Image 1 (cartoon, chains in turn purple, blue):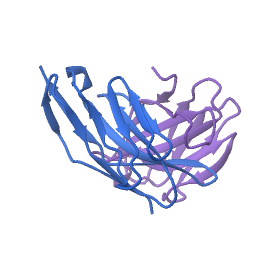
Image 2 (cartoon, each protein chain N blue to C red):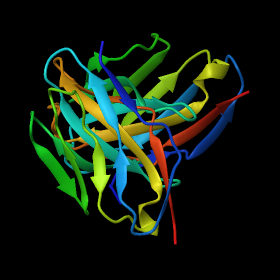
Image 3 (tube, helix red, strand yellow):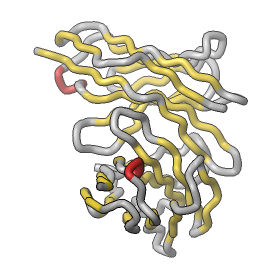
Image 4 (cartoon, rainbow over the protein chains, first blue to last red):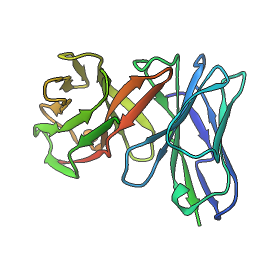
Length: 114
Length: 113
């Protein structure tokens, strides 16, 4: 049990729609990172939020956006969904931005785009 | 760019067998190295880490040594249990104003009684 919860656990959308995924960080964690894990692949870094500001982004287009709230919960929004967006989306919280800070992962949201 | 290559699975072993999962990396700079484990239906959990060359990370009987000369971080366990069945991910971590992990594709381990 990591203390990081994600909702919903499963979601089905159609191409072109928009989706919002939610993450509740472990208490006291001011940093959240989002990862996309395609079937049979390792997770890929989408972006990181630190104290409500985006402070790093991976190789994902602008239609992937996020928010981090004052209580450090966060959202991942994806606009204009494409079939290739079907994946498990993981959020991970940590005490800070240092690479050696332990990441605590949620169980993920499985998104299927039809 | 940064990348991690790990052996393809599944790796199938009998209980009490010796485990090795190979991992090599390419990085600009000096990364930290990690092994994460993912049990079915769960998120990733940190198994062990090493932050500099020649460091050995260990946890729950698993070990891995950061070898800069061979750019490797192989995971080993002397005697696996059925409960070790999971997917194992090797990853490297870098700081560029923010922290990011680059993962390998994962290796599934199946341990039979």
